[in-house]
Structures are given as C-alpha cells and as structure tokens.
Length: 378
Image (cartoon, helix red, strand yellow):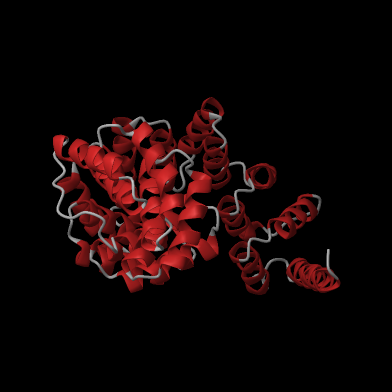
C-alpha cells in the first residue's frame, strides 16, 4: 500500500471512530453525520471500512433502537448480508414484537438463497401486527427471487390492500407482469408507482426498459435520464441509457454513458462491446479497437464481438489481422452470409482473388447481396 493510501485509510478510520462515538454518546440523536459517512463508503466501494464498522458495532451495547432500519439498509445495499443478519438479531432481542427485524432478516436470508429460513422469518413478521404492508411486500420479493411469480403478485396485492400508496409494491408487481410478457399491465403498474412516488428510480427505469424493448427510444431515454437523476450510482441504468442512445444513432451521447458505466464497473463486457461499436460509427477506430479487445477478453467466442473486431481491423487496413478473426466467425456461424462477404473483401485486399470469389459466391447463396468488392470503410 502506498503512503498516500495508508494516510487516507487512517483518516477514514479516525473519522469513523469520531462519528461512532458521537452517535453513541447522543443515544442515536446525532445519526445524520454517521449516515452520510456510511453512504459515502457505499458510493466509493469502501467495503472493508463498512465491514470494520459493522464488526465494531455488533460488539457494542446498546445500539440506539431508531438506527437499526438505516443500518440494515446500508448492509443490504453493500451486500454485507452476514453482518446485517447479526445486526437484525440484536434488533429482534430489543424489539421482539416488531415486524421490522424479521422483515430485514427475511430479506437478507432470501438474498443468500436460504429460502426455507427466509419463509419462516416472513411467517414471524406477518404474525406481528405492525407494518403488515411491508411484511407482505418483503414476502413478495422473496417469492420473486424464487421465480414464483403468481404468488409474488398476490403478496404485492396484499401489501397494497394494507397501503394503497406503496409505490415499490406497484413497481415489483409491474416487474413480475413484465417477466410474464404482460407488458401493458406492467406499464400501468410502473406509471402508478411513479405517480405515487416521483422519486422511485426503479419505476422510471423499468418503464423505460419496456419502451426501449418496444423501440420507443426517445421515451426510454427520458425515463432512463430521470432514473439516473434519482440514482446516479446505477451502472445498469447508465448501460441501458447508452443502449437507447445507441439505437437512436446518438453515438456521441451513447459513448459518454458507456464510459460512465465502465467507470463504475470496468469488467462489463457488454459496455466495452457497445462502446466499441459506437466509436466505430464515429470513425474512432483506434479507440474502438481497444474497446473490442477488452470485450473479447470477456466473450472470447462471441461471434458478434469477433465480427466487429474484424471490421475494426479492416477499417485500419490491417487485413492480415482481420483474416483469422473472420475465419473464427465462420467456424462459429458457418451460415452467416455477411461474414462470408467480409471474408471475400479481406481476401480481395490480400490479393487472393480465388478465395475472394468463393467467399462472395457463398455470401450470395446465403442471401447476402454483394454490393461491392474490396470496399474501403465499413
């Protein structure tokens, strides 16, 4: 570790101790500075700092009762499931008649794939009299994770009977309907969710996804932009906004979104691929080459990635490098007339007219019209 990184870590730990001390001394009254620090750690991916924090407070007594829900929400968002479960157990000991700790425990065990245990916790939550809407909602979420769509929808409807203004229940009800192909019903649910809660990022995002699938890209772009205004940390949201812009031929804007998505998560092969295609469309073939090579690292036998990588070599006049790539695509997709056509162009450029003509004829026999031979840019 560099000295700069060491000093930064030391500073973060000093700040954590100061905020935790302040929080305990105020008996939970001064929680906002600690809350802000927790979400700052989440945003910056400081998982180790969060793990240390949860380890320390799990040994402290007593944790201010009002702080449990927010602490468990951070554990959920940070995927600190084991740490969250330990905290929920402490909450159960302090408030055994409240549904809250059982709902949080059920959600975390469900995310860990421990469905039998999760169902028992849901049963205990529903047996409590408080917050029935939240208990039914969380039960529906677990059923969704188990791909039990019909039962999940019934649970969300039960939640809405207890709280007709629960926007997130409409969102998940719409999500379940969308998975079953009932897009019109899903659109109604997402619109209702947004109407009730204009700050509902998931509702905007899911509604945008349906419009994108329908080819209504301008509507999708507006909804994705709103979702990202509400939740700038959504890497998937940025990728999907980029795809909608890409499909609208707004490649400059798409490039920006793909690069932002990769800034949040550099190991996203899809983002590298579409970044490469957008850069190619803008004529930035050198940068596109880098993006396609990154994508190939994640999808070494994806004919789509290889095809565009080959085209990128052609656009850089690197026909010798393009040839083995188009040959690999031919092995993966022998009936792809378009690939035979580009193989013909590469053979043409390399002076092998016999193989070029053979490839052109094969392309035409597969329904790909040969418009030109040995063309320039693609």
